[in-house]
Length: 372
Image (cartoon, rainbow, N blue to C red):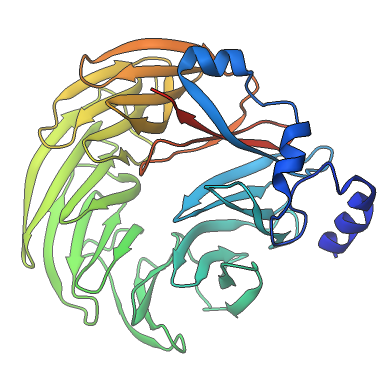
């Protein structure tokens, strides 16, 4: 209903707004008429340029809740559970629609094949990536506590019963379930065709076969794992409430090794960000820390830093609690400059390329790129 009402209300303004249909065509005309989210003068000072800007038709009192990069799409969801899918290269709208009534909890968003997987109101929901239309809605009769993941054969669903439930992907028939040996709560799950790894609120990192309840190896941190475990090839990076960031490598299918741990002097409450060469970890009260991925050594610490926006050319672009963009030199381990980003209220962390994605409270979304 909301999509239809939006369309009727916005028809007289169709030439001024972008991509209200699913095609995202005609965006350049609207771009030329929209005031830039960040002024060209500030962008030039920071060595950035605007690639595109999109105006989302948010309603009065509606705020953006999440911005998520998945593949070549940027997904933005409002606090009223309205979602926009944008082409992250050109900025066109791929689809825009309500995915749940206002107030219904939405947990996670991951992509697999041509579907988006999420949990809406405790139901496993699969959306078409091109239209946002529901393809399958499943009540698993579980209290789901972590975003489900899948490989070609199975879904892996962590529930409040302290079990990881393994369901056949084609029909969601339950095949088997597993639990940590200490019966701790499973809070994060990773899966591919060769191994499934899950983390717990007791600090356990456990690897198992993807198609059988057989444990392969286990690493134990002293306290709970905070946020999702991050994977890069056979390396796993985790933040622990014991104040350390850990890198644990899978040496072979049945053996793990602690490669390094990095002390942050703060109780960590979220997962690290990974790029090709660095690990970026936010530590409450300590700001954002850059850690060398191979050695675990400290590269720099920015007390006002909140999150990584992107990384390029040996530089990290960081959003701060002071409403600025800080540009950090990863080679020298120091701040190069900062510029005013006061309008920015939301951002997406990009760990794969140089583009920066930001938004403001009026629904303007911009993509920036370094020029040097």
